Image (cartoon, rainbow, N blue to C red):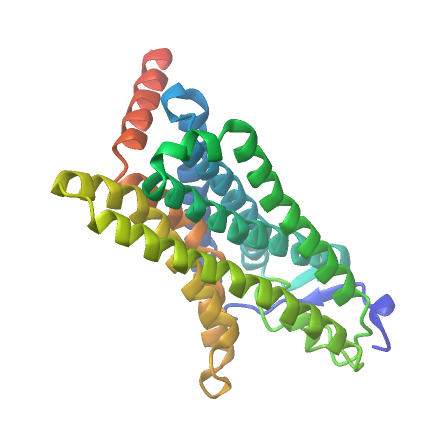
Length: 311
């Protein structure tokens, strides 16, 4: 293949060539996808319908659920269809869409998690200024900035990656299209331009990481100064779900992209890709609802209302 203009489709990496295992993969992904749709959908509905949850923390959680739904819907349905129909094909336009939307949702989610760390910092370390610093307008602006930063990041990287000439192959070593795998197909030194963009994004991402770490250092210092054990427990219960989500998001992503080449293999890369692209959107609703009594109560009322109206 001489360049990207001659490519009409890509070949994605198959999980297995055995038909029985392909169907098992389809049903497994279907279960995870339905769990993600149900969990995130319930959180979105509960927050939207319960006026007691119309606070900055839950507003950002609603946005996080929307981003989780978007990211898992970008990769999993196509992987399920390929396993069900025993194919590896994805069109050039489909691959470009996966590149853009996956990076868009992941980048926006990372920005939003940084904003949520700031929300917890203000709530615990500066509670008297919470209403001022995180008013409704400020929350909308911060959420919009997170979405906009994800869009701009995805647009720059996708446009730059797809402008590269590709001649090595059209086989992508992953079950969905992602930028590092497309760069491997490039036959031009112009891919260094994209590497430069990735380096800039990595620096910005590291800045967000430092902000989150410093925020939680201050949060833990403030919580440990709370005299009552009940107060400390309540403060920790509002922070631990966010910290768990951030840890899951960063640990799987960092391992996926920064693991040593010596331990890299197609099967391991496939498993790690599932861990960072599929598992978090399905697990996040469970993490947030497990210790959150207000959210549990809202979900219980939502279930009662649904059952009552069905009768």
